[in-house]
Length: 197
Image 1: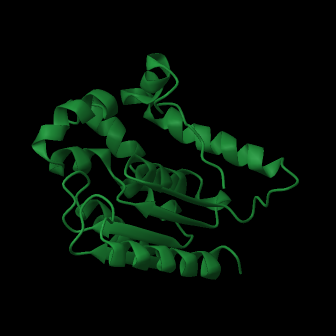
Image 2: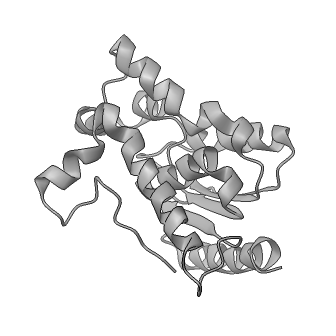
């Protein structure tokens, strides 16, 4: 298991946090591309059996890796991830918008909107042909469930295997033990089916 701190991660100073803001967004995706290159050089790792996963922004990264490097991974598991930063900004709770716009870019600006639409995983789903397991809470105030649903519908239309776990009594991540347990065991089954076979 590899847990990279792509540019934009906290804990490495303010300059590092700002390295993926606005028009630099794709640079954080490229960090995972570099990680995939590195994995291929490691004799103890199997570059043909890579799965990406993450929650919230990590879920967005899982979507971005799926749409940018889908031919280099075996499966992905985005959890409460944004699939299009424009639709996310338009539908997240209003109290969060201005802070997120500083980081992701202001979707009301036509040039920024065009850039965000171009790089959106939702608008690049034709590249996603590998199995995907999508996890989402119906009552998520941060990343609306519609971010997951638009991806599930489109990727299923491509013919790729899609598992979708929508908890009707959860928000941003699963906090109730029965739901968390179900997610855990479903994840184990997904990995057995699509990563380990």
